[in-house]
Amino acid sequence: MEKIIHWGFRIVGTKITTNNQEAMVEKTIEAAWGNFMKNALYNEISWKISNEIFWLYCHFEKDFTNDSMNKNYDLVIGCKVSNDMVAPEWMVAIDVPEASYMRYEAKWAMPDAVIHTWEKIWTNQNLPKNYTFDYEVYWEKAQNWDQSEAEVFVGVD
Image (cartoon, rainbow, N blue to C red):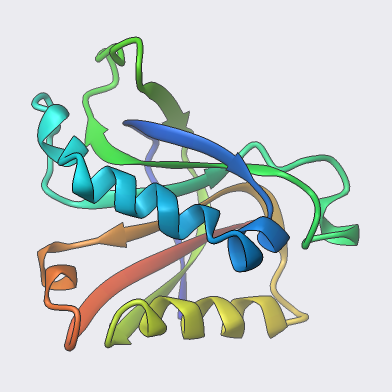
């Protein structure tokens, strides 16, 4: 874990609105990922500037810290594009501003590696989380589900 400043960037992808309760019980995030992969939406973003897949968590509902299970947020699954690219009508473009993040590495079998990383994040009472933008980056090594590598970035003050 290390604190870094990340330059701003734009993500284009598909969006769902969910909450942690729905994600656990109704598997909304799992379904969104399945849709992204099954329909090869990665390939539909032909103007991407890198090969990573981003999971961007944003637009956290007010007072998220008081009820992190039932308050809504958006999840955008997509790719990094140049800042002037416009999303097609069936996708969204989200601009992530320059900000401070805590960077975590998730190494192991997926999805357990990322789940365990988020468990560490959520139980860290001293993490100055700001509930603006959090994201996961799935590099090419993430395709090897048994020995995978991904990164989790948590927006902090």
